[in-house]
Amino acid sequence: QQQVKQSPQSLIVQKGGISIINCAYENTAFDYFPWYQQFPGKGPALLIAIRPDVSEKKEGRFTISFNKSAKQFSLHIMDSQPGDSATYFCAASGGTSYGKLTFGQGTILTVHP
Amino acid sequence: DADVTQTPRNRITKTGKRIMLECSQTKGHDRMYWYRQDPGLGLQLIYYSFDVKDINKGEISDGYSVSRQAQAKFSLSLESAIPNQTALYFCATSDLNEQFFGPGTRLTVL
Image (cartoon, rainbow over all chains, first blue to last red):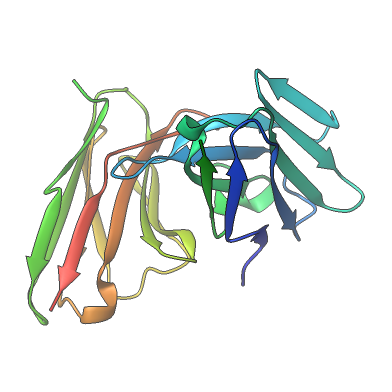
């Protein structure tokens, strides 16, 4: 059972554009929602995370938007750069899944110069 | 030196062979995890351990086993490898929420 659904599977954006990746979850006990970034040949690394007590969190060009009622959250990358080209994973944990992350399927982002 | 190391980085083996993937960490974390990554499926949890005496099955534990030899070491074994276990395998550690991943082991089962 896939508890976190991520879309799109792949995304192509021009340099300077906005990249948007969406995730939806089912388990209402989830209370921690991170995004991980993975470059080819490397393991994933934490990019930014949010808890449901806020609707938005921004770190530099990266913003998470969170909609608790819709059980959705999204990653926005402003002024996308070629160096942002990577695979992005959303994830969630909480409740009986405390200490474990349930990952989305991943989005391959390509930013063209 | 890397905080989370995995050996080997690449491995090709044959159907039916036993293989062990090893993970070591210097972060001092109690929690360790093994994941499998397949294209389009994301990261799936195989096993996890919250301390040396604690071992738990994840979403896809069938065909795999683990051993937590010490706080810093967590190994994954495939007792009898099969071709659909061909994948990228990651070890991770965590303190509370953030997980720190190793560089991965690319395993091919022929």
